[in-house]
Length: 220
Image (tube, rainbow, N blue to C red; front, side):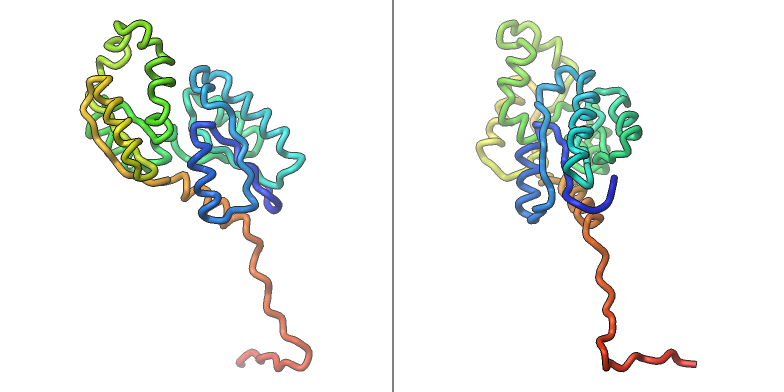
């Protein structure tokens, strides 16, 4: 990434609310968020070129660019393109790992590999994205085909919300899965943005002596 100037954050639309919350809470005024549609996850082969187009368009206005996407099913194509463009992204395979943090997500995966995960975004839009998106509302017989091998639903909560927790519990019941709640906050997403902000700060100015000030002499 090039140093200096404003920062463009290119992100998945599923992270828009959380990124905006972190940017506002930490007063990261130099950061501008531009999101691609969350529905691109249904066609991951299109993600890489969509991100590339945002990068090339953004270079005229922004000194630095940071990407808030995981691999997200691109099979390494996104990382290969980012290497070509000289742009960094947040570490992690997907948003579940961003929010949980890599150690906790690894622990959850080892504890029960057959886990289905929800974030606040997915809990909020479960009916539209999962039930309708997979056609289960029209063809209930598809539910065991999609979810028959899962054993639990883990809700990774970014904010404390009784409404979202209730929605996540209802989603687990709809899928016939055990329910587990983990309050993660913004996890590595916030840490990544704060790290980008720290790298963006200009170096501290040297304190030069004013005329007439006594300059300390080096000791022999």
